[in-house]
Length: 43
View 1 (spheres, rainbow, N blue to C red):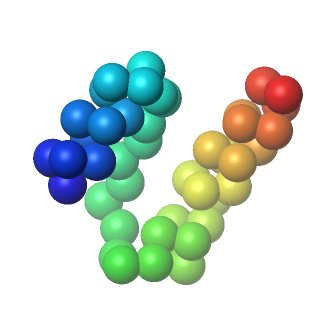
View 2 (view 1 turned 180 degrees about the vertical axis):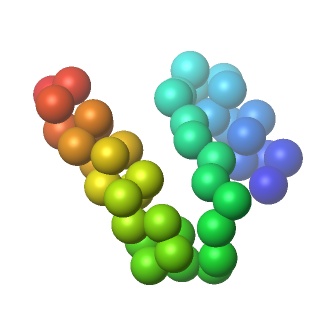
């Protein structure tokens, strides 16, 4: 996980960490949908 965080930091990516199961789309669908909607609106 540290390598993923470092890569995201180096590319100045916006990230979100959720306390979820292995499949966040099923355990926290609202939070995932919010992230997708925010990204789509930014285009």
